[in-house]
Image 1 (cartoon, helix red, strand yellow):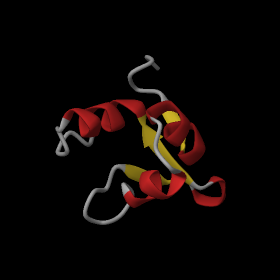
Image 2 (cartoon, helix red, strand yellow):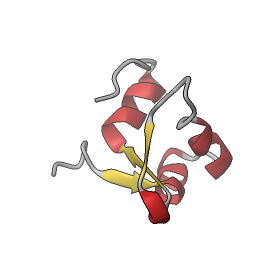
Image 3 (tube, one colour):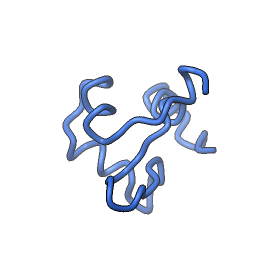
Image 4 (cartoon, rainbow, N blue to C red):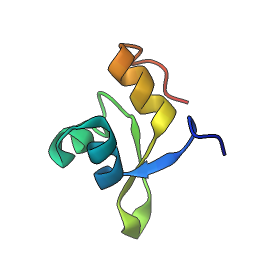
Amino acid sequence: MTEVDEALTTEEAADRFRLSTKTVLSLASPGERLGRNAGRTGWCFLRSDLVAYVRGGRGAVS
């Protein structure tokens, strides 16, 4: 797995992108669909998806 495809927890994503955990969780909403439910461990976000979102490419979810 390359650094760009790194999977991040909600807390890791919030820390890395300087967002609140509430904001990161909102990206998992049906309108955004950047997160994937990882079951008991919570939500998982791909770094590449978050980078694309920050850059304005919201449709870049793989």
